[in-house]
Image (tube, rainbow, N blue to C red):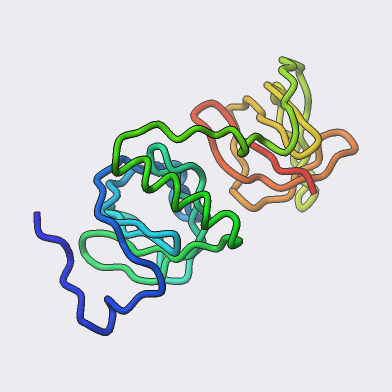
Amino acid sequence: MALPAESAQENRRAHERRSIRLGVRYITHSDLETVGKLVNVSEGGLYMETKTDAKVGDEIIAYPEGLGRLVGRIVRKDENGVAIEFDMSAKQRRVLTKRIGSAITGTPYLRLFEKRGHRRMALGLEAVARVPSNDKEIDCTIVDISPSGAALQSEQRPPVGKEISLGSINGVVCRHMEDGFAVSFA
């Protein structure tokens, strides 16, 4: 399959794109968890083949195989897929550059200095998450928790970006999982 044609103007990028074919899971406001195929990537963005109802300007969270969680905005959409520009710090870009190199060469990327900010504690505790905007209550199980977030098992999944209260702790839904959702604490 031919890659989308790009004009010389579109190809003048701040970061060099590297061709790589990997599976991508992603989430937008219009798509729960959907899949695509990575075509190329740089520390500034990526292009993936996918069918989506998301529009240019929509936020997206992508999880390309082996590259981690990449947050950004759709900057271009065509009949084959979407281009995403990442929203990340210089440090995150440096780490992504190393991960891209590892994915291309097939050598494992050792994450010695990339541990979570907080250790997660497994709970398995029954709880009720509350959506303050409409006082809706969601029965759930707290799978694991840390000072920065929690994974909740639930049949209901509030939209990504929705504010949630878990007891006296407030947070925001940051992603959906097959059997629930994750919350990032404020």
